[in-house]
Image 1 (tube, rainbow, N blue to C red):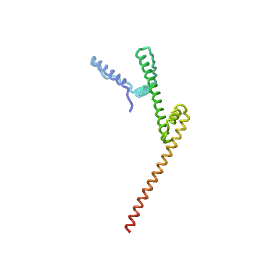
Image 2 (cartoon, rainbow, N blue to C red; image 1 turned 30 degrees about the horizontal axis):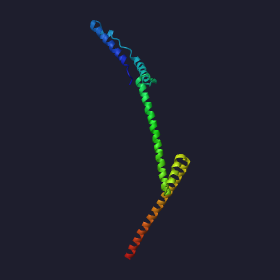
Image 3 (spheres, helix red, strand yellow; image 1 turned 90 degrees about the vertical axis):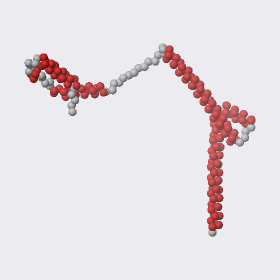
Image 4 (cartoon, rainbow, N blue to C red; image 1 turned 135 degrees about the horizontal axis):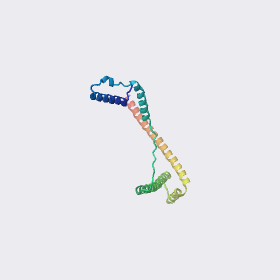
Length: 184
């Protein structure tokens, strides 16, 4: 179905309206001789042009936005200064938190090392503190030793648990054997 241009239809009605006014003014004139039927063969061409215009309007338009930042305004200047101060405070807080977390990790490793050794004398404790303060390479070695010890303890615990379960199973089987002997 072809579309008809609204403007063309509007113009047709306007022409009809004008001609009806003229007929009313000159009632003696023959109405059919004055009314001209417009040429409707141009309607498909006009609808094609209208479709082209609609397609052109629907195409996206590339727009560029340019924003300028000026600290000439007092409000913007104070906001920028406030953000900078907040950023600096955040950086200091993060730095001290990292230091605190490192201390907690070191203390945890010291505790695990002492637990691995079993006992420690005050002299050995001072030596351990000095190692953590000065020699980071030694700390890596201590960390490796503690990891290996904890792995060995865990494997031993698993082995003991298996032994305990096997003993429990053996006791259960003994009881079942005794019950079977009594039934015979």
